[in-house]
Image 1 (tube, rainbow, N blue to C red):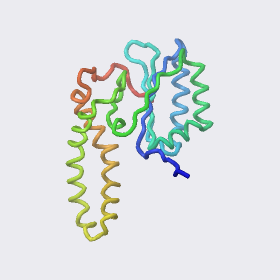
Image 2 (tube, one colour):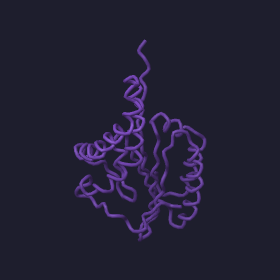
Image 3 (cartoon, one colour):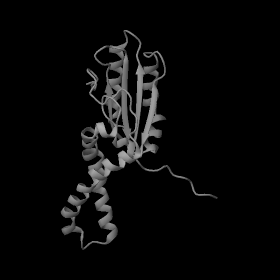
Image 4 (tube, rainbow, N blue to C red):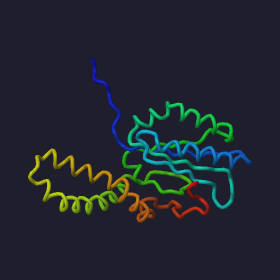
Length: 200
């Protein structure tokens, strides 16, 4: 019997673009705020942002939510809360949402407020990741070496990676994505969209 194939444990981002019926915008925002608050208690979630239409109202809303793994995302998609969200949304939109899923390193390179989320070229991702990872590796090494050098190698590596990954995911890479936006998204319009801001 072949061993069960497990899904890789890596962050995953879902981007959904919604086309809301004219006159239903206020109700849509109310419903989405309600489910966004409930989302905070969902195991494995890494946050959700809801972006409202731009300067010229067009009924287009963009929802971006993240999970720590594909497994936890799939579990939430099977939950009663998610199914209620989908039912409430269905009555307020003119068509099913356009959905895009980003995994692995792509989740580091997402810009809030973009009309279209498209992963940068792999070599550009690698360059910016190297720029971000090098100083973080040096700092972590300098800070932890006095405490960990006498520990077994496995303990050292676990502690090192446990610091490196969160710092890159939630601090360094979001900052570098904004700083290097024009390099990462060459040829794309990366300027902030007027009025394209998170729904509070």
